[in-house]
Length: 146
Length: 149
Image (cartoon, rainbow over the protein chains, first blue to last red):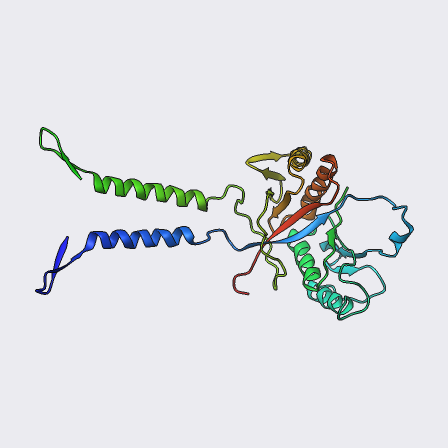
């Protein structure tokens, strides 16, 4: 297809233009990242040690967070002498105010163990994990049934 | 480029090459989009998310499919039923022995109960022990970032 433009003999070739447009289109399609916005939470699973013989291990007693089953209201219980609102947001606020540098209760690498009941959904586990990580805690693990 | 046979039938090569290239590009694109390691799962979407982008590196992706019946997928293999977790543990142990620094990525739908995810995490821990790892097993918990946040 050839189109004559004006009287100066300039011609516009449509076919190569469409070729180039298609090539650009394909380039941008390939360059686009099709993978959905998947992200991760990092978690290290150390080998479980039964009743450590190290007397110093007691000092770093982990903070235990229990996720109760729906039958018990489906709340979050922080084991210890603390009153925590039983929601992920309440947990995040409690930890953010307790963990250094804002709080004085725990270091940011204080071990935290999340222990879900067996019928707790993965979404609630991740919400809780997210709250703990968002509060600045770096040493979080999940208590696996063994 | 045009070739004329004795009988005068013309065969134009240009559109043929165009179409062949388009087909190649189509299949390249489709193979990129269909990622077999990441089947469609309704991953949890915490808001506001504290998750981070997975750093590049070797990883084994374990998919926990089926909210009622446990179905585990790893590297194109899949296991179902009572021995699924044990088989996965063996496969992970072999992987971890070969690549001790590999990360195990766990993908599970948001409604999956902990009674299905927990044993898989425990299998990863045991696999690390079977493989003789000196350090912990690196695990990545997959979540979806809410694009609107």
